[in-house]
Length: 118
Image (tube, rainbow, N blue to C red; front, side, top):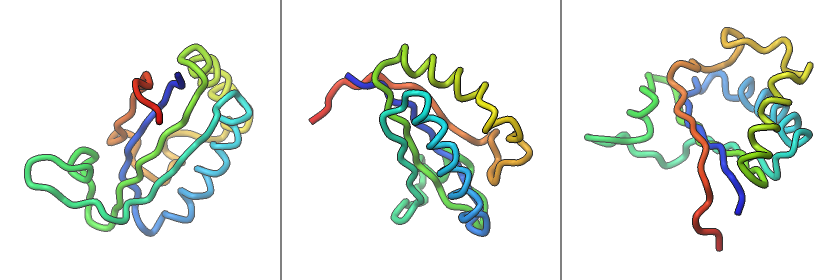
């Protein structure tokens, strides 16, 4: 079964095109290092919630939307090797936390073993 890296972030609406640009560029890098697919999703119908919600989880501020994304890998081993290779890839050389169009401190991420795939 595949292995999935997932993440949720809050991105300012005014930086959507900037985010889409780096999302497309990074997807190519991850695919070049073994990812099977990279999916980026911009919130369209995400309720605010009263106790828990995606916007609350990433502490969405006024003018921000949730981005929910994942990368599918053939296995955890492929993911570990692919992530390491991607982080060492010269195409990521100029990227720093300060150059991202979102606040990385509010990112929620993790790796997941697939248990059902239909």
